[in-house]
Amino acid sequence: MAAAELFTTEFWTITGIIFFLLLLSGLFSGSETALTAASKARIHHMAKQNDKRAKRVERLIDNRERLIGAILLGNNLVNILASALATSLFLTLMGDDGVFYATIVMTALVLIFAEVLPKSYAIANTEKMALAVSRVIGVVVFVFAPIVSLVQKIVRITLRIFGVDISSIDNALSAQEEIRGAIDLHRHEGGIVKEDQHMLGSILDLEEVTVEDVMIHRKSMQMIDVNAPTDDIIAAVVRSAYTRLPLFENEPENIVGVLHAKDVLRALRRTGGQMHRFHVKRIMTKPWFVPETTSLKEQLNAFLERKSHFALVVDEYGDIQGLVTLEDILEEIVGDIADEHDFDLPGVRSYNDGTVVAEGSVTIRDLNRMFDWKLPDEQATTVAGLVIFEAEAIPIVGSRFTFHGYRFEVTARSKNQITGLKIRKLK
Image: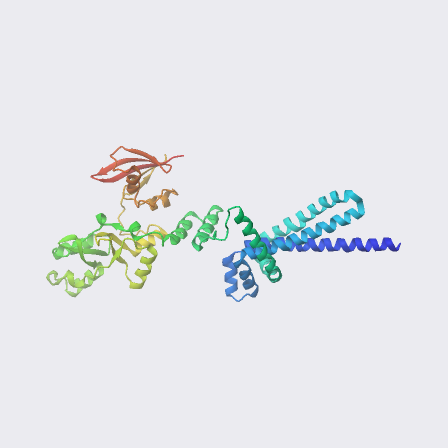
């Protein structure tokens, strides 16, 4: 009787220890999922609001390798110990067959209650669970730190024997890449509409895109001869869709100033409409020249700092290449900004059969944005430039090319410039 009571007491003690170890295993498994899946941005925001638990989580996920190593060490310790105790218990109860039954029972218990259940809860309540377990896991990481460091060294030495060196590998994504990935993911899941995806992506591209990619080319610039008759200057200002116009002297390459329509109106009011008293050189402003390699981010900051909206773009030799305005940069982010004075110039037309007819001067970025295409824009800014780059020649009208999954047909050419193209995306 005493032996039976002793056996019963021992049985329930070991059983209790096994379930306690399974509980710890579930804690480790759920903590690993919660801490690795927690949003760093959200945790950082909470930490800035002096949330002590968020600060602990932030410290833990700053060293993910040490965190995961400590959790895996603890998880394996409790799982192996629980399995060993269960095997011993079943051997006592069932003899040699106990090994088989212990394996079946422990596999089911570990899978359901120590893996799937806690990880499912952690996925559904990521930040909540990460904050809740931060103190406990912090202690575990501190206690296991020496062992984890030793394990990491053994792993790296072993891998180095087989020619793999992970000490210099850095797979961390940049902040821009992480944000871009999140935007693409939410777009794929339907949380962000196409226009918002393009807008947010364009903001991230400001540092990579240069003013050369968005500027108005010198061939399309509207300029005024500073020595032209007053009537001609005022007429040109009235006809133009722009409020700022470059002024040149003797030759278009020699830009000496910029004329603002409001300054013209103020000057005319001061002179009482007497044209002979109007002098354009008195009201023009000094031109501002920027290199064509300037990034849009740098140019936007420069516009804001100088409180200016207009700059002339030059190449490395100082030759005029075009002009860029604050509106050009904003349009790169939000898309075309049209007002009642903008001209409706033909540029791109699409047809029901999937064919797109475009002018050669249309930029590749605009086509990609408009039709969700993936044309490369590393080697050329305009679609005509892309065709010339790929063809390695200036093709004649009627020439057809296929590259990057698209078919191009030259429909118009003026001298050495491709002015019209027909484009179709291949299935």
